[in-house]
Image (cartoon, rainbow, N blue to C red; front, top):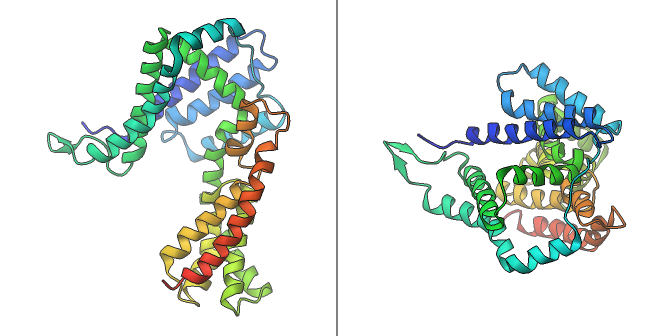
Length: 318
């Protein structure tokens, strides 16, 4: 009776599969076959990922990367209302249009705080291990239902809007998923140990400041290269954070991990590899400069990285 995160995987997979079918039926789409294959393979990962051999999932990811890299994932053609119709709808609905979007964080917070200890027939109502994500999924489904009720639209129209949004973001939708897997792959491949060897052999870490600089700057640089702080964290923490900062200089592990992750986020602000943060918003906002978001964030990211270095140097023993 427990609502688990596994419930939402087939929901996402079914949505992606329907988007793939809609793309395939779009005869005005410039790359409908390759784009449909891309979304179909991604749907397969959600629908049958655990039942597929790891090699099959890996092959699907490689094929998806090739399809995206060769320009096979392009936006389709979507029927849109005129500017006058959109303005009339906006005047009719007013600020009520924000309610479905606000429903997502409201349900997430309420569920994670008020329902975390609720049990039915001796079992928890919501999966404790993934409580926040389960509540987020519930909030998203309720928001879709609320949006359909508010606008008097059908679930099919919601699916059309989902396809339009996915088309706007393109292949970047799957980038966080792949980069997170990349971090795990680096851990399994021993990249952290290799980084530790290179750092200790080529960089003098005989002072606390040098070790802090290498850790924070390395966290940001790895994030810039990989586009994901979660992928950089195990590499730099396993290579420098634990063996040097904690092992040699006896830093507080909690402070080291928190400020290190914050340094990685500074790298996120500066890289096009973090496409879901920096490239997708530029596309959705139709900015003339696709790197405009990154340029606007640089004056924040660089000073913040310097502040992180100072904070870790001062607080690592607290």
